[in-house]
Amino acid sequence: MGRTLFVLHSALTPNAVADALRSSIDEERWLAFAVLVGTPIFVRTVTDIVTGSHYMSGDKWVGLLVPPGLVLFGTVLPKVGRLLGKSNERFILEHVQNTLAARIEDVA
Image 1: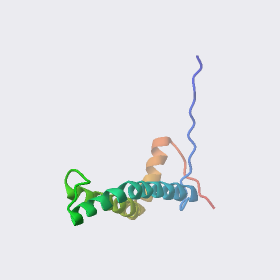
Image 2: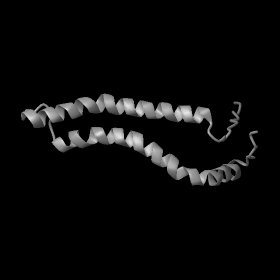
Image 3: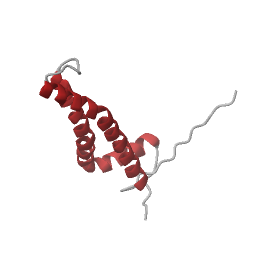
Image 4: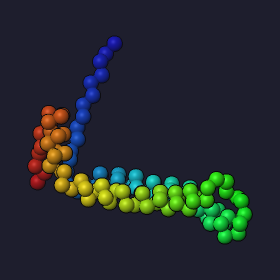
């Protein structure tokens, strides 16, 4: 049996278009999921409260808070993460360099 050798090649560049694009697509997927799943739940819950009907079972506060919370989570958390991570760029580069025995190349 032969052995498989895995080689990791990666480049950390400032404002990498691919990373920004991938992050943007992931955020869009999350928001699409949150809106597609959360909107019917939220609308049915509001309808139950306004009309006094019982389409939705369980606590009404869950249907009122969770769908908007998912959308808020999907929009605010990535922005907060980017804000908090800006100061750690040098630490991350050094950690990757030490862990992978990599070198940092100047992209000019």
